[in-house]
Length: 347
Image 1 (tube, one colour):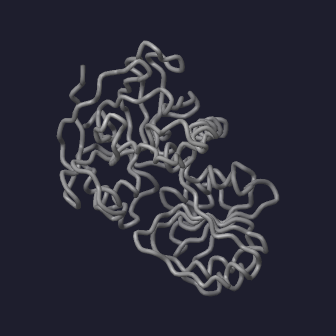
Image 2 (tube, rainbow, N blue to C red):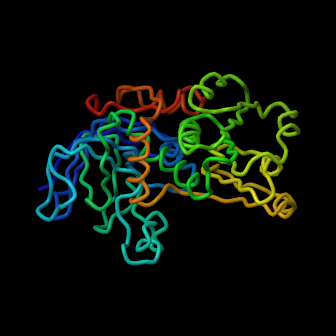
Image 3 (tube, rainbow, N blue to C red):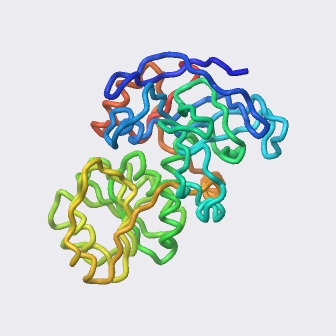
């Protein structure tokens, strides 16, 4: 039988989130029922709740940074047991048959992965996310959270962690490499931590020096203000990899000038408006402008294990569910250090 649980939902585009109830499906053969303990607030929650990325499904329960404890398992579940500490990220299903799915890149499912919220499952019903008390998830899309990370700081790793870990690994961040992280926010602060743990020399490129002390404490070796034109002169041709984590419009030509020959500028921020680019900024120096979207389930587990090994979680501000609308406005004003996390006990 289905389970009725409390949740916070946006009833329509741009409307404030409000407390409501939703139905969670019956636990199936390969499902786990998770008592949600913490849910991170991602900037993409705001983009979708306000239809910044296009038409969305309402009512919408956002949240794809979920950490909790298994309270029930289906009869065919083999990977989890009651009491396990688990996480759920940005997707909850995929076709499982296409080449990306078979190669562990479910996020690039040819038929489209099923998002944790603002999506439609194989049963034809809308998916609801982590701003809620419980969730039912197929065990194949559920992650183990290692004991070395507390659940509150682990929650943001399910999006912010994998979103930065995957491209840093793919583009070879490590010893002997110079990596720049554009923006020191919810994504950027994890990019700095992970790039440092991978052994790279890390530079933060931020609009101002306001967060310089934080950046250095998080593992950055250098910190520059992009509002200073001298920065782009001094750092020309410096970096092997630049990871752009901001969702605002930036001058990609200027940032491409900071790459070494053969370097890559990888974008994980998702601006709502298209960008323009002079292709000569790519042709000169054989440079790459790339994008990256989360990671597959196996890689996400790898990231969680890596973070536990290095004693890393997100830097968070824990809030009550009733503060979610205020938190959205503060995210838009860059007034959080560095990820809001909802205490699900307050929903």
